[in-house]
Amino acid sequence: MEIIKRYKIVISLIISLGLTLIVTKTIFFAGAPKINSEKIRRTIKNSKDSLTIFKNTFTYKISSKKIDYGKILTDVPAVEYAVPTLIPIKKSANSQPIFLAVSTPIPTIILIMPSPTQVLTPYPSPRTPTVFNKYPTITTGRINPSPTKYINPTASPKPEPTPKPTTDPLRIDNPLDQPYYNPRLAYQCYNTDRFIEVYASDVSSASCYEKVRSAVSSNLISVSILGKSISINKKAYPAFKAVSDALSKNRVAKAYRINTIGAYVFRCNVNASTSGRNDLCSSGCVLSAHSFGIAVDINWDENCNGCSNYTMPMEIVDIFESYGFRWGGRYKSIFGSTIDPMHFEYMYDLCKDLN
Image (tube, rainbow, N blue to C red; front, side):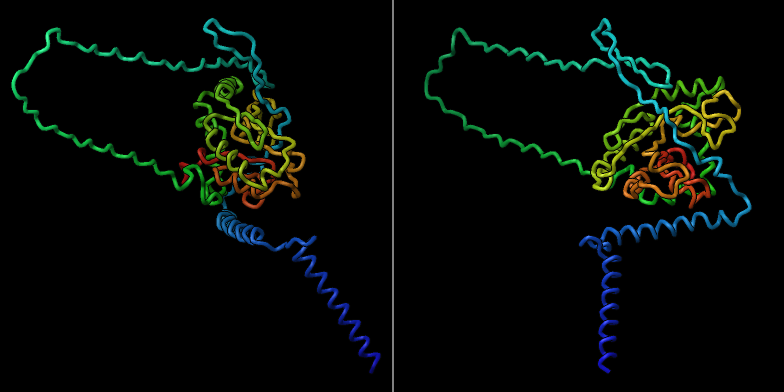
């Protein structure tokens, strides 16, 4: 009996130790709880996202009309991203500095910086001279002064403060419900003709997209994403700037190290085209979203095209999606295409008419 008791004690100790290890490994790690409010919030959001994705894709999957998004959405990263470098070359006759913008493979762009606005100090209005009567009038007798009239000044109304907007006008509350995340609608606004219409002034695509390239390259502007400058389309600047501001305030985003980043480069979409990436004169060339300055790739060495393991934090994904961007990391789950976790493309303005 004594031996049985000892065995029971040993077995109990082993079970207790095992349960302790299980609890420690699942709930705590190095003294920090694995289950916290942030993880609960993230889990709830992921569950809602999964339900939305299922709702958008179920009808499409059972329908007979399907689009091969594997040849439309997926794109490989570009290496030769073009970020213009401004080099001062001379001053014009009116003292306006002229800069030479050098970039590859974009043609040379000459930017003339406007002179600072001159603030003119208005001349003071001339004072009205005081006229003195040479011969003052002398009044005799008793003078009955008239009672002094006191005028109560009318108090000027206090200006009412302009109410601050309670919501961000650019922010989207339901990004996964947008047409560009719906496989039944996405292809209608994700094509070269639509890109040219919105972001290249609807110019002709003839002559190897020369007019398209010129229209886009003359409409570029820089924006900073977590301290890294990229060239984007001016029409997409408000969305990129909103993302930039939101990222700079997010703790997780600020801690994420960006090693490589790129946006504008004029080339063909490799997967969607039957030509080479730089063969713009081929009839099989389908322009990439990068060609219009509305897409950005972040850390393609860690978030490579087709890689199921990636480092892109979901907090960064949330911010981009909240301002009308589509994330390549959802290509597989929604469109059945190759996952592209480095890739974000601004889609809201292209697809808003389908809402």
